[in-house]
Amino acid sequence: MSVLEARPQGGASRKGNRLFCIAPLIPARKAGIAGSAPGQQPGAGFTLLEVMIAVAILAITLVTVYQSQSQSIAMVSNSRFLTTVSLLAQGRMAQIDAADPRGVVSAKGNFGEEFPDYAWQVEVGDVKEIPLLKRIALTVTNNRMTTHNSYRLVLYKVVLP
Image: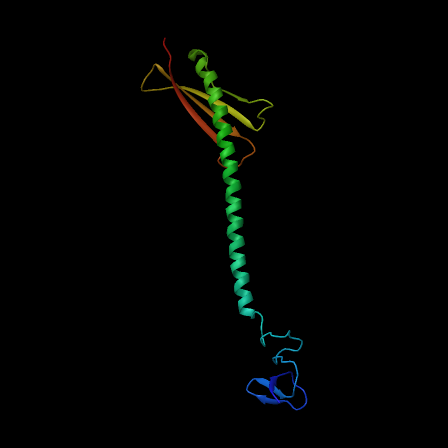
C-alpha cells in the first residue's frame, strides 16, 4: 500500500495540515476548500488586502489618465482660440493700418457670420510724450468663453499734420 493525499474520508488520519489516507489507487487531492480543483493549493486566490491594493492602483491610474485627457482637451481649446483670435486680430489690424491714420476712430464690431462668437473693439488715442504718434489698440474677444477670452494688439502710427 502507498500513502496518498486525499480528501477526508473514512480511515483518514491528520498529519500536519494535510489529510492522508492509506488506500490503493485513490486520486490524490489536497485538502482545502470544498470543490477545489485538482492540483490547486488550499486557500489559493487573492486576499482582501491584495484586491484592495490592486483597486487602489487602478483608481490612481485612471484618475491620472482622466486628468491628462482633460488637460489635453483644454490645451486644444486654448490653442484653437489663440490661432483664430490672432488671425482675426491681424486681419483687422491690417485693415486699420492700410487706412488713413487721421480717419481711424474708436469703434466696435464683429466678424460676421463666419465668426459669430468673436467681436472687436478699436480704441484710438494720442501719445502724450510724442504728439505725432497715435496709439491704436485692437481687442478681439470671444463671447462664448468665460476666462482668457480676449486678445489685444497695439499699433503706434505716425500722423503727419
